[in-house]
Amino acid sequence: MSLLDRINTVASHFNGPGLLVISALATVAMYAVLRRKEEFSLHAIRNIAASVVVYGLNILAFILFMGDLDRLSRAGYAALNIPTLPADFWQGPWQIVGALLAIAMIDFCDYLSHRLMHTRWGWPSHAAHHSDTDVNAFSVFRIHAFEAFLMSMTYLVVLTWMQLPHLLPVVFLARLVHNMYVHLDLDWDHGVLKYLIASPRFHRWHHADTTEAIGKNLANVMPIYDVIFGTYYVPGPCRAPMGAQSAGLSDKNPLLIWIFPFQAWGTLLWQACHQTKRATPAESPVSPAE
Image 1 (cartoon, rainbow, N blue to C red):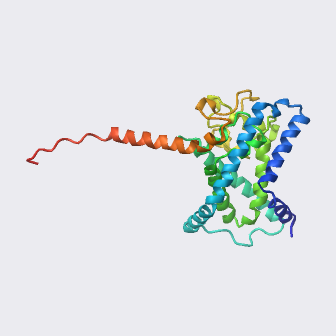
Image 2 (cartoon, rainbow, N blue to C red):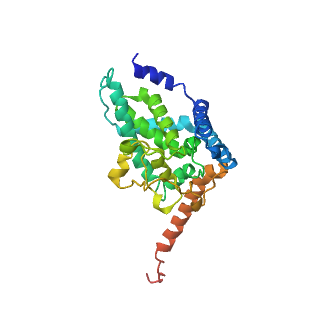
Image 3 (cartoon, rainbow, N blue to C red):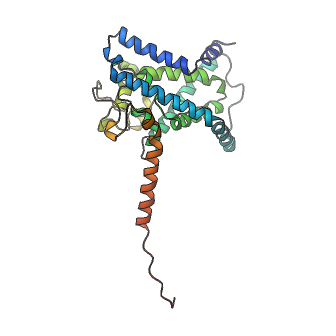
């Protein structure tokens, strides 16, 4: 068994509670080592509690529907009939190269998905993540089941095409730990590596509740994608408020956070129907002779 396979075996044992422990340790370290008293303020604790409850609601949704969604996604993938790389393409140390390439490709897919989720119809599925007004390591758990499902499907497609589905646990864990890191309240920008590896400063601007930052810094791991596509925005240290309260989102009520997509899409559909009715020209009366 290769070193990467051993790491992957260990990573596969990390489940929900284990991941929450990692976030808790990061929060304690921020408080004890960096003297960030606000990490355990009432505001922070209430936001953390809301994130954990949203995470629990997602787990419940996945328990109820994941079997059906998994069968649907695999049937859809099979219907696409996408050719894959040879089964023995990655051997020995080359698996590490494959894993790094997979991370880069997945992050590109995430960039495109993320950009879609910052559109009018995509925003409701992503709004939960932006509702957190105290962005910290627990913020990674504040995503809606819709967003989690969409993202996981891109991982399935990319890793299956690359013949690396067995590396999903280690890739998932590496990305999750990095994601926890960039959500910490740290003004670190990684210097010469700032375009290669996302930093907390880079990602805090993505969560800033300010007009200038809307739809910016969409890459999760590699900011170079934002540079290429013109969505990079890091003017300096981020002192702006976090969250999306200016958009009317609740930050501490997990039920309102979780049902927001249904409310928002319902409103959009209602508006679309009424606009269609108004756009339809009135029918002219028909005379008996006609």
